[in-house]
Amino acid sequence: MAKPGLLLIYPYMEYMGGLITDRFDLLKLWEESDPDGAIAERGAGVVAILTTGNEPIGPSLIDRLPNLKVIVAVGAGYGGIDVPAARKRGIIVTNAGDTHSGDVADHAIGLILGLVQKLWFNDTYVRSGEWVEKGYPEHRRSMSAERFGILGLGRIGRAIGDRLVPFKGEIAWWGPNPKDAPWPRLSSPLELAKWSTVLIVAGRGDAGQVVTKEVVDAVGGDGYIVNVARGAVIDEEAIIAALCEGRLAGAGLDVFATEPTPPQRWADVPNVILSPHMAGQTIEAIARLHEAAATHLKTALDGGAVLNEILA
Amino acid sequence: MAKPGLLLIYPYMEYMGGLITDRFDLLKLWEESDPDGAIAERGAGVVAILTTGNEPIGPSLIDRLPNLKVIVAVGAGYGGIDVPAARKRGIIVTNAGDTHSGDVADHAIGLILGLVQKLWFNDTYVRSGEWVEKGYPEHRRSMSAERFGILGLGRIGRAIGDRLVPFKGEIAWWGPNPKDAPWPRLSSPLELAKWSTVLIVAGRGDAGQVVTKEVVDAVGGDGYIVNVARGAVIDEEAIIAALCEGRLAGAGLDVFATEPTPPQRWADVPNVILSPHMAGQTIEAIARLHEAAATHLKTALDGGAVLNEILA
Image (cartoon, rainbow over all chains, first blue to last red; front, side):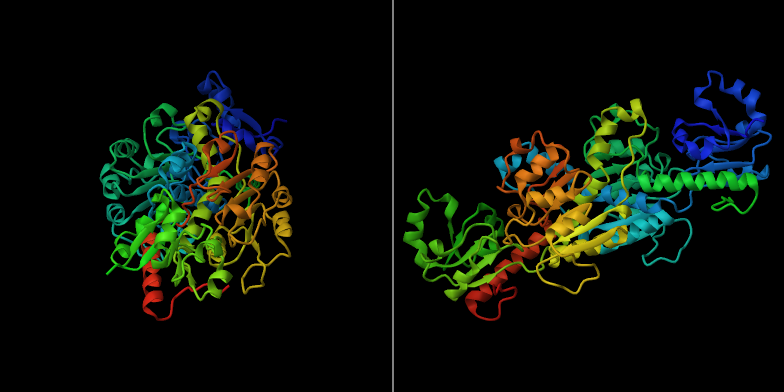
């Protein structure tokens, strides 16, 4: 008897390995020369989808999967999933919950310190011989003098704030809803950007373009922007232009408008630290993510309460 | 009437600018073609020395300065000063006290995250096109899985520990004296190194070579070493050999055996982040350091209690 079908859209999901192959027949869409034909032929057997959360999953796909019961996002993001359309069909949607918020926050702090402590500039200064030839470089600003603006105070944003506290700068945030937090909520993304010397983007990936050109300009020539949310949340062209024209002091980007981002896009852009969407990708978090995703898959199919069900 | 003389040994001190020139005649030793002759001629007028704390200041110098009243180290370190010899002469020695501990700790955390988050590896991975060609890189360890060993729990070491707490790894320390601290004190530098995945050197610069080859080997091929103390505290040759031979995963160095360190020394050394002794050098801290040094100078000469006098 055939195992139930599990649809994988993106190669990354193969990392799940034995956690899924023992239970499911895999339909790897990227290996199919005719993906639509493969879905027409095998779609009726598909009971579950594993997704990074980014791939578009809406009616045009799920309407061809009549027995689909669960969509599991392996990660915190689920911006690609049309959750209302899925729920209308009675399909359960789950994400990773808080499995890796701390790791993403760690990476955000790494990018912040990379910028504020001028780690690249300093390393290059030593290696180029400038320290020998010119003496000490100019001083940097102190972390304690920075104003950290956190855009989006979900689990990740909150974990970023908690890590920033001992550095003794000021902290504020904006999010669409008031929350119980030890830091003030400003009135809009633009007001937060005006106030911030370091703007940290940590909100939901499906919130639209919150960091517009106007917001980038408000951070300004002495300011830094760090993005560990999703590329779609910021106007990447505006960031690139501002960096090239010195209207933004630096940026630390883990996520991009298109991923993988083409390297030539960044070749002539100064003061930007790039990272291949790795913020949450620790050995420990990935083990927890895979375990959680496999558990969600099996629970959804076997019956029982599913942790981290997305309800809207 | 001539102003009292202030001996400057290292050019960096010129940054003090108006804070000292209004009160003192400066003897800039590095500008003198015959430094010994200049001291013989003007030494009797010298009432104070400003030093980074690194320059050797002992009997061979101070015995030629009969009216010397105060030696001011502009910074936390004072390893170059022979404090007992100075005190025997009744000369006051001061340092910066806690003026920039937080900034040094910030820099240590930046170097730690630069290593653990693989910031350089990731940036290069994107820029080289490997993300496009090969997909995601290998995962890193989580900060929450690290064991942070702090060598030296003075003001800087304590500030490093405080900043590490929200990252949720384990913390331990070693120092020559027991202290009231929320983290366990291990029995020796070697025991701390064996336990640590990240060894952070934050102790006094005059403690001798605490990080010996044996300590480096104990940190091991999966471990990192960060040094924000002084170059003399570690066996730099052992660090270089271990990095080159893969027996140490990485190092973040703000201080060196000789400074400025020659760039060719590091050209073929992998996985090392270099920084030109800039840990404490923030705009805000330097302003406080200079203000404090000038205040110490004037108080020592005008009479009154001097803050941050070094008594041993």
